[in-house]
Picture 1 (cartoon, helix red, strand yellow):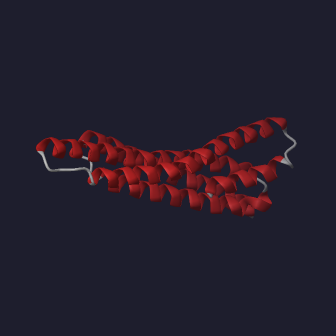
Picture 2 (tube, rainbow, N blue to C red):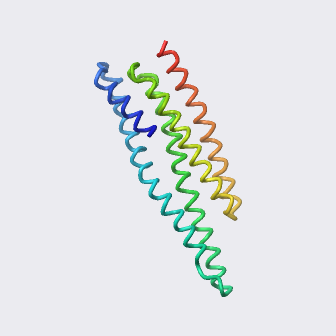
Picture 3 (cartoon, helix red, strand yellow):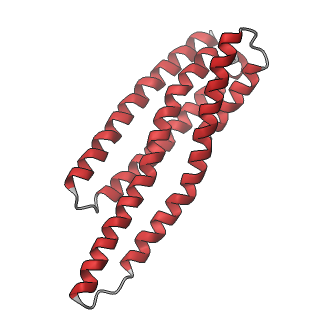
Length: 176
């Protein structure tokens, strides 16, 4: 939803922009945001599939030692995939937060409140993804992998907060 609102504001803006350099910059932003929009749509389905795979792995037989070991390995693989999918969502939200700054800076003033709504949705999308990554990481035994993704999540969170402050600053100034 956040990416869709950013696209809407840019489409409105592009109809009114006369500066060719700014127009090119905004068109690039449109292309990037459309890419994230498409990716996020796909990730919704991938997340569902990944969760289903985790549930299926838990149903694997565990009667023999060989079956138990295979089952453990499959569960770990599935939890890793189940962490990776929302991690990709978190990364996309981080990139969208950066692009929102441009939209807040140059977007049509009459639609600037939609940028505020968009960044709220981007933040919520990140937060949901972060929680899903963390719950899946809690089941993963590979401590290096868990630490790497945990650190990356915190970096993205910090970046998003910084970008959202920039966005809000542009919005506040432009709404005066």
